[in-house]
Length: 411
Image (cartoon, rainbow, N blue to C red; front, top):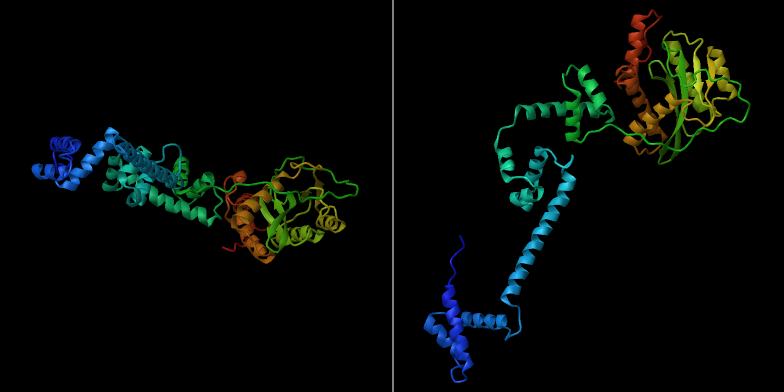
């Protein structure tokens, strides 16, 4: 209910009419406002303002009429409300995540964070939410589902962070199941989306392979069939680039196709043959140290100059390995190695960079390869780590030694 006015409207109209009539007669014009004010109990200045406004409304005096003043006040109020609504939407666009209708919890959290700035009712009006929804949400005790979701989200965040922040919902779900947590994959997707967690994405980079100029007599023994019946049957090798503050760095990897394990790697400032040769030597040394026979191994690569070098070919021949190359200018001829390079750059180089120099990158690569071999879940081998895949193979097949003894984890 509006507060009562100081003067009734009828009294205001009568006072204005009497003052105007007296001011029309020159004989009664002097002191008219004072006399009418004393007769009706109205302050003369108040009456003067009423009369002036009445003359403006009638068009007898220049100024802003009452109707114009009311319209201006309404427009100013609308502008203030629109500015507030725009500010609410602007701040909400960076706070709320999800589809056209964010979850109620997000909306409640936003209102709680901004109620002092905008007020609860204005925010609810802009976001088209009933204020009772907010007040009910903050007054009721947390539900059993919200308590469970909070506990599960903490575990999911721990798993996501412990694995370089690269796992998507599929691998987070697999790791949760491996740790004994009974949870549906759709629940993992929902909780990761609410927590703003997502898997790493991969992007393409410039070409780094330069084909050799000499005649190529090595056949393609793989023909895009990147499968193997056991460890040390088929290895693939490739080189990729990495950017650092001190210049370009290059990384070479040798991967066992059966388990997707990185058996050898090297990081260098140049693309010389030693880069690829060092990675090959590491792979051969790792397997030989474990007492494993690599005779008859198929070594597949592209036609890069590092892999057609005489020294590289001699090392393969001395190890009893058979060289295989893919077709020229075809990204699928060595697809498995290319896929690993893409993972390496997405999960480590871009995810944890930028890198100051090659020394920092080399140390990080060592830690990444250890994690990749012993902890990272690989979808192509049943969502288990490569080392675990090889251990399972050797448990079911007689071998001189186990892979678990060949390369102890850094963790």
